[in-house]
Length: 277
Image (cartoon, rainbow, N blue to C red; front, side, top):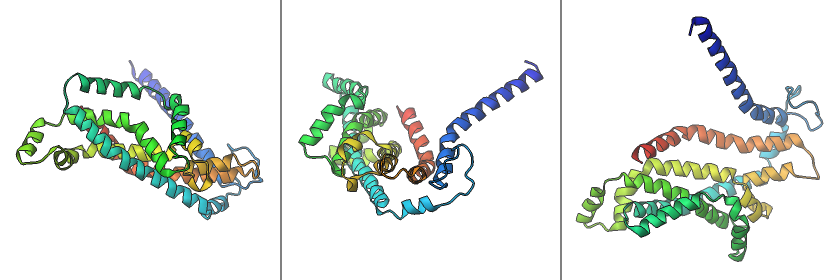
């Protein structure tokens, strides 16, 4: 390949990459552009706003419901982490240290359950939650989220625990530690990388969770942040599009900042678990 062909190839690659970046950036641009315009401005959403204003952001941030929905979402994530991480870690560790037909059957069943889409279980799950009186409850939705994420989390913890030498268990047993004490004092500290990764995944998942909260949380005081934004977009009385877009931006900004701050832990945890696996 001569110099001209190399240069042409680089230009084509640059153009393709620029188009991909533009496609990904477009929704962010529209979100920001529409959120700073007046409700009476019906010009094209693609053109920059002529008279930008932060009035809609002030309206959103002074609404008590937005802070209530933020608190509900954070509580939702905290409870799901509390229910999910210790249980999945202990289950994964137990499976990694077990041998025999029963252990293999449980592992296989766990992987098979991971392949079932959540929407396929929607009707049965909703009926179960109603029968258990767990609707309109942050506790209930967190319990559901932990159950739905259990198979995937156990798979990661099982794979990770397999690489931890069994000599550590034997040494702890010689020192008089039982299985539970061995797990919490010896094994769990070694799972820091994968645990941080799973915690970050749970937080992002709770922030973006929509389908089950939509069905299970019908009272406005129980809304998560995503349901609060949905309420503004589907409000048939006040069609204030810029206000809805501002609410969307308020929802997106915290999780984007959180993701960029924690990105190194996500990448590190994934690499760590793949190497150990």
